[in-house]
Figure 1 (cartoon, helix red, strand yellow):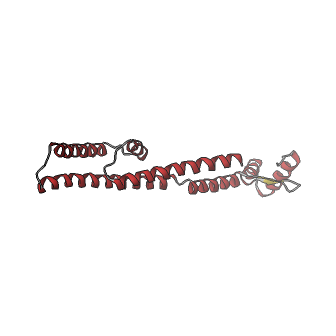
Figure 2 (cartoon, one colour):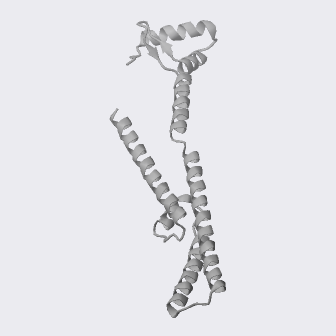
Figure 3 (tube, one colour):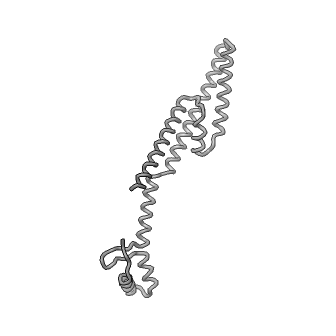
Length: 179
């Protein structure tokens, strides 16, 4: 640690007074640029501190690129929602095709197809009412019964990747805290 003593400060001020006309500008220059003591110790100036902070900020932004992570999550959620909507529409088309191809053979089959039709419409309404933010979508979709298996698998993969990312960030924060 650099200990500032009066003799070092006076020497620095006198050196700066040779180049500058007044004490205020000499003190300002020392504050901005720092100074070196007689024993070679360096007192960091505001410019150097500012540069260190800028580099640390850039490193943190690179390391924790939140915007990119959120865009990736949003892209995945939109893909999942699209797959589910396609799956719902396919189910509805299948029910309609079966009804056109062959008349219903039993009341059970008619009830089953009516149930599928009703479920498909409920799921479409649910998807229409999803929140616009990624975290809201994830929370709502956790309890959702997917009709499309691909959408369900992709959502489970997304949840697993989010859990992994959260765990990595947690342990990285802990290790930095301990360091």
